[in-house]
Image 1: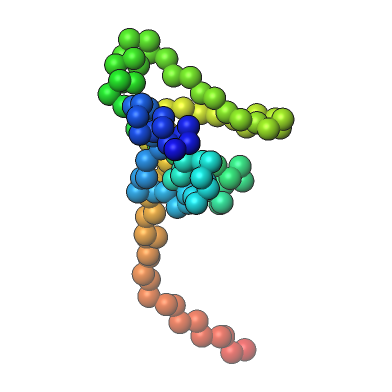
Image 2 (image 1 turned 180 degrees about the horizontal axis):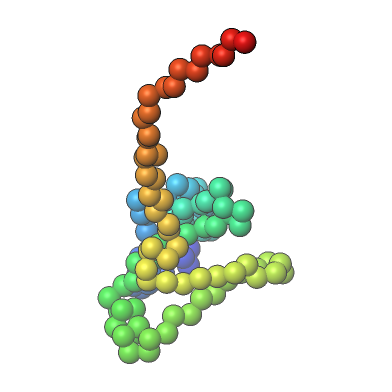
Length: 116
């Protein structure tokens, strides 16, 4: 059993979970990584990526006391990408409401050319 498996199954830590809008899984079939379900937005120029994490009961108790979350990001020597943490799904996943166009039905006007 590798270290990641030990942590995930023996110590109650937050886990990435699948969610309705997820359209990709990073790290799938890679033993050294835990699969990460994400919403990967190719239409956005920044190619945003959203994941959802579920906290354990122990972490919820710690969070209630400290009100702090720590984020660790591996950059592999590259510049750090912007990060954003939230508990509000609507802040990171925008639901587009598409309204049907309003149709105006008018009778066509018949134009008869004037003869000189």
